[in-house]
Length: 131
Image 1: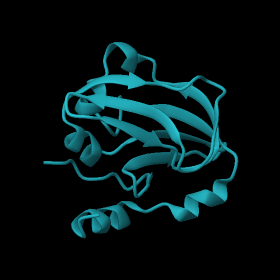
Image 2: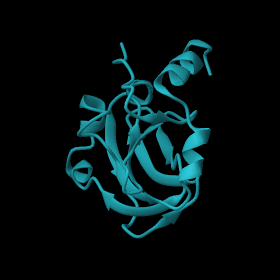
Image 3: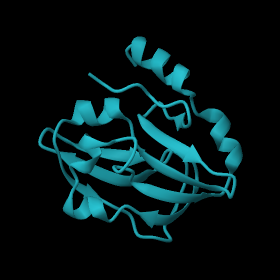
């Protein structure tokens, strides 16, 4: 059973979460629901630091025993850090999707894009509707 979705972040319809900080940066990962659907994660292909991504573009790739899935950028910006621990311990995403299993940190190029994301309640509603 998925853990509750924390209220302190934004959510995409593609099952990514984002915590926005006042300095214009954000931490991005996949939701607990997403890691549950993927099952056991065995590999994470992280982007290069400095890579520029646009909203909805692939920012990373997560491979599980079941499938290979793109992780989409919930907002546009520059990758300023990656969670390199995932290279050795990709299962951290399964164990702590909303914490130690974060994937990238970004410097947002257009913070207005946050308005296109969902709140925890909005994301919960989307899941209930089966999207």
